[in-house]
Amino acid sequence: AMAESAKDTPIGGGAGGHDNRLRPEMASFRVLVLRFVRRYFTDYGLSPSQGEITRALDVSRSRVREAIRSLTDDGLLLR
Image (cartoon, rainbow, N blue to C red; front, side, top):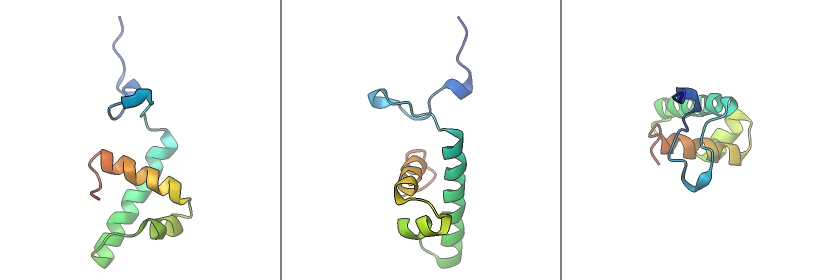
């Protein structure tokens, strides 16, 4: 039997039968969100609101929420 490649291994627990692998567009969006949050925190000493991230990146709030949840689950952001 062939071993699964790293790219085929789900990220996260995969609970509930959901496919938790990151789509390429989500992975790159996560980087944009993380960079924005880090820059904002460096500049202002506090975290931006979801609304501020939404406006700065010109995307929907649900997309920002999904990225924040994913980054938090992976330990890259604290809530």
